[in-house]
Length: 186
Image (tube, rainbow, N blue to C red; front, side):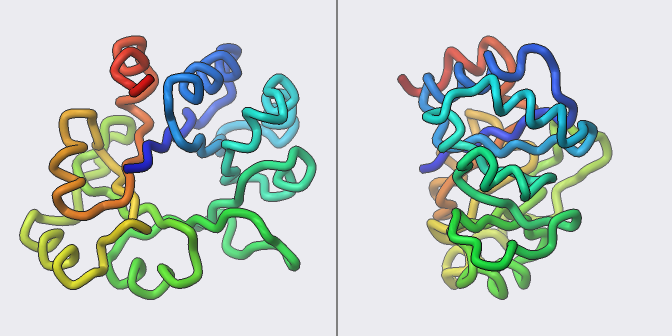
């Protein structure tokens, strides 16, 4: 099961250290999501990371950084709605309904489905799915190895999500603490 970390919305001094630590401890991918930061702040952060670390980064808000820093991919969401012409990187997308997952799965390497549980990091961002609905989506093949659970995901919920055939989990609120770093594989 993929473990994906999503960065906090604002660039902070410790970001490079945190990103390196997460990758060193086994996180498969880092989604650089910095809507509260400028492109230049993101650029400075990426400059602090070596090429090897940058190959594990998917960018959300500034797709032009993909080529500039040889990143892993670009994430499509409400702010970035299309891939640049000739784009050949990892393709990921945010989805908030099972219908969106079914529609876009063939176009993407993986998709986020959210919020699966009540969000830890976004107040008032409540789960949109009940257990029966998720089980039906799993049994019908909508939820599979290309679908990544996002929203309120904690380490103790990973086994449950594996049982529903999710291919991965994405975390922001749960993964940024010292205790979380110690729980990661490796």
